[in-house]
Image (cartoon, rainbow, N blue to C red; front, side):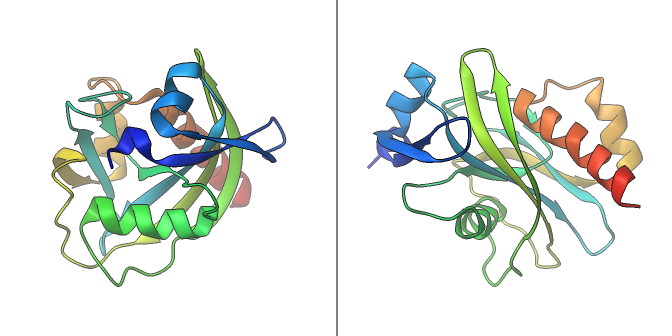
Length: 171
């Protein structure tokens, strides 16, 4: 089975399931589904940043400051967050990611409900080669500097902006 064949729950504007479709069809037709974004920080508090592989269905070779992906049909956001974080970081035994907030992302013809999480990863990472072409842990200043230089996934940039606002309001 390819990633395009993975079955996703299709949801409405209230995040209620209204059907199911293969991932490739959901992407091609712009069907609203669910995604998770997990900010992974190392023991020093630096953020895991990576460049997506050129074979990714959406935003190939773009940079991202989150690990994550789609939520499978019948899967909870929390289950998907742990699965995706462990898969993309190439670790096992990661603590459960902490849920922070959700938002509806809409960009062009794409739309998905997005759950944002954070997790501390003190394990040595070995990112999934099918997903990650390059990676590093960057401190806040380095990440902010790179935002103006590199090509970033638009949904990740939106999640990052909202995460900064969320933290500012929470402090």
